[in-house]
Image (cartoon, rainbow, N blue to C red; front, side):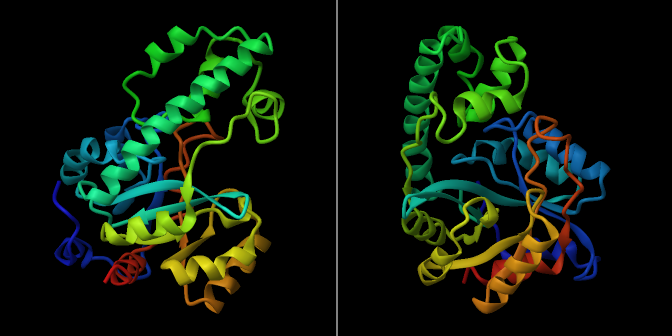
Length: 290
């Protein structure tokens, strides 16, 4: 797959730097989104988006499927990924933009998480069965056998579709949320290793939804490792959160990033077209890759 280059930015020359038309954080059904990669592009076109990044959890499988549709729709597709990591006893998610999906680093990362996610999901389903939630494990595996990255999102949607729970809130608060009886910690790489691998693959690194990690004291370490941006505009963030992380971004010379974190209509509707960022931020982020 062709790597991103500076010449790709020329397609955006007709827009001002301040034009709000970029979504840096979208999921497809290659991980826990409900929309096919091509459908992501179509929704983006309908919402006047001129550039976007599909950032599936620990996989790049959706990028190839989206590429041709993006070209037809005249939308700039930024190669992306969202990597789950572990640092100081907490989970942190990092977005990698402008990565080379075919690089050794990304291939190694993806292959590792395919295994760890399958092992984790098997253990979680076993725990649910022990709790008398009658999941048909074979049926679940058949349903998602072609999905590149298995997450709690697919499991929760499956349980809801089969009528085994009444709501997504129930499944996360009662069964598979952190600290719940069916929860199993994903075997993650360290945050510093993830940052290193994204950078070595040609990408720039953004800390996703930092408010959900609640560990601001870790940010200086991430900056030392090569962090380029931090999400200051995310659906989970309040206005106070936005102000707080904008100030941290300025303190550590990080780019103020954002996106819809769309998962289809699983989480409060299809959010593509919300939390749009300015076009000029693309070149500013790309400059951090070199």
